[in-house]
Amino acid sequence: MAVIDEIRYRARSALWPIIGALLLAYFSYHMVQGQQGVLSLLQLQTKVEKAETLYASLSDERRELEARVALLRPDNLDPDMIEERARVMLNFAHPNEIVILDSKPARNIR
Image (cartoon, rainbow, N blue to C red):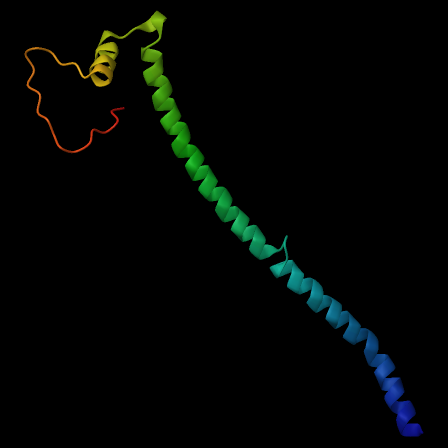
């Protein structure tokens, strides 16, 4: 009986540290691997960096297009810009120009 009592006493005294260690392991795992863990944070930061890069390139392109549109507004007409757009859209050329046809498809001129 003394041996069984000693085993029970030691098991009872070791129970709380084991439970604490298991809880610590559980929360540590979810802190790293969980839905809102460290790895998810790193993946989210990578996505944010890619989105910021895309945003920067698109905002540059938008500024360029807005500048070109501003040249076509009625209050600020640029004759060169109107002529360029008419040539591109209507396939016109001056009589004294030489036109060289290329078999490659035409690119959108910006």
